[in-house]
Image (cartoon, rainbow, N blue to C red; front, side, top):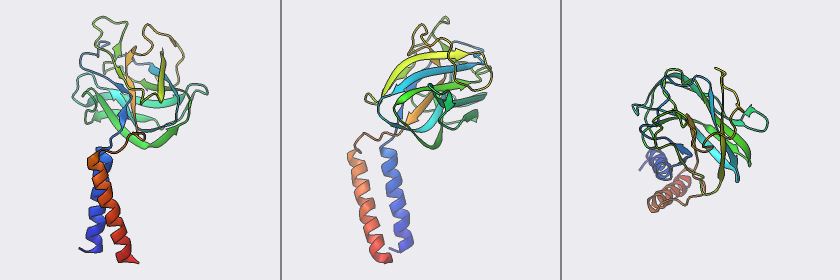
Amino acid sequence: MTVSDMKSTLLVFLALAAVANAGTIIYTDHAGDGNQNPGFPGNLAYNFDVNTSITVTALGVFNADGTGTITGPIKVAIFNDTTDTEVTPEVTFSGTYTPAGDGYDVFQSIAPVILAPGHYQVVAVGFGVDPNGNLTFPNAGPRVTLNDAGGAITFTGSAFDFNATLDSPDTCDACVDATHQWNAGTFQIADNSAAPEPGSMALIGLGLAGAALLRRRTV
């Protein structure tokens, strides 16, 4: 096997290991949740506390029909709820994406952002054409499923405002159901605390062995 072949094989092993140890979706939406149609064009936010540091790897948005197509544009970002400043990049959704989770969320990867313990909001704006979910509207669906990442996150409320530009809203900090009020923005974090599955461990072992062999061949 040539050095080039060994490099390619090592990359494949490491990529497979990363896929096997996937991340965690914090807010997962479901079929039948898109009951506000046309959607609300202002900001819709979920508030949450970070108890132990997490790494955000993707931002997402509710996709009511499950086709992966967003008319948009819908913008999503995470804000520090104490300083009202953005702590992740803004991601804009408009086009067709691969559905994830239960099939009614779409995501875009971002450069990993570490959130230290503190107060935050995930905010989405721009549901003027695309439906969002609203617990106060008739025919509310089964609502979002929450994942606290093993206690790393505490869900603390929801908020909104009527601005058409992305910001950190503070209206309705204690809505009808503080943890299930909207179907709007979501995010994904790296599953840093989970041990790799057995298959992943085998792949990592092979990858490390390949790396050691590659080092011997190149020194």
